[in-house]
Structures are given as C-alpha cells and as structure tokens.
Length: 199
Image (cartoon, rainbow, N blue to C red; front, side):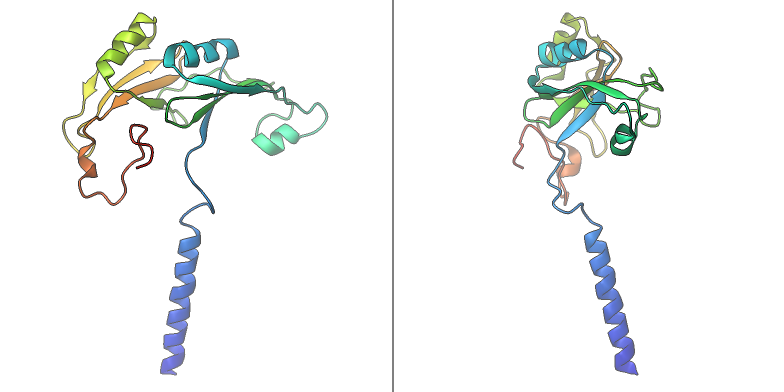
C-alpha cells in the first residue's frame, strides 16, 4: 500500500510537471515578430514611419474582403463585411516589424486610446540620445510630451524616456539605457534590447 501511494504521488508530480512544462511557452515560440496597428490613412502612416521615425518599407499587399461569407469574422474577429484595403509592413532598425492596416468596416470606431485605457498601447523605439530625439521630432513638427525624463530609482533606474505622438494620435516612446538598468544586476532574465540584439 505504501508503494502504491508513493507511485501515485510520483505519477501526479510527473504529470503535473509535464502539464506545467507544456504551458510555459507556445511550442516553437522564438520572439516578437511584429505589432499590428490600424491607421486612418495609409499614406500618412507610411510617411510618418519611414520619413520621420526612420523605418524602411518592406512590402504592401491587399485588399482582403469576403462579400458573401464570414471569413473576415472567422479569421480576424472583425465585422464580416470589414475590408482590409491595404497592409504595409515596415522594418525599424534592429527591432521587430510594424504591420500597418487600412480597414473599413460597418462598425468601425474612430477612437484613439490613451495609455491608461484598457487596450491602450504604445510603441517604444530605442535611441542613443533621448534629448537629441526630442529636438529632431519637434523639428519635424511631431508633438512630444514632458521629457526627456531620467529614471533614477527602482528597477528601471538607468533609462530615460520621452513620449510622442503620430499625427493621428498613436502613442510612441523614445527610450534609452546606455549603461543598462538597475534590475539587470543579478537578474535571471534580462529584457531583449535592440542595442544588443543577440544578448
């Protein structure tokens, strides 16, 4: 009886461990490939990301629609009559890609979320000098917020940040941490950084 209980405990711990191991990662997950953003005007968005931010256009394709069925809803969770007029992908330095979508849809909302809104987001670009980035952006007529703001305390100490906005309201950030951040000392996991992509 004693061995049966021990065997049951061992089996439970093994199966439990296997369950945990399989839930640790999407199988074959290698990293962040792209961020998709729906924009109101594709020409304006491509111009901003290429001629202001400094990304490079890689490709464009589309349109996509399904006049008779529910393909768009089934694949993307949008209104069945939604149309993707165009998709353009840009590559930004040593970071991941940005996928720009120009949609039309019967139920389309024109909302620009604040960072504090559920579903709000921003895209951060690593720069060597946040003050130089602010001067450059303002010279291009881009709206910037307070900063550069150096972070001097806590785990993020060592970084300097500045938020700015695309013409249609998308939130972006310039960030720099040339000497790293405080949390890195003794950290088991260090955040990926475009300043050292192989690390």
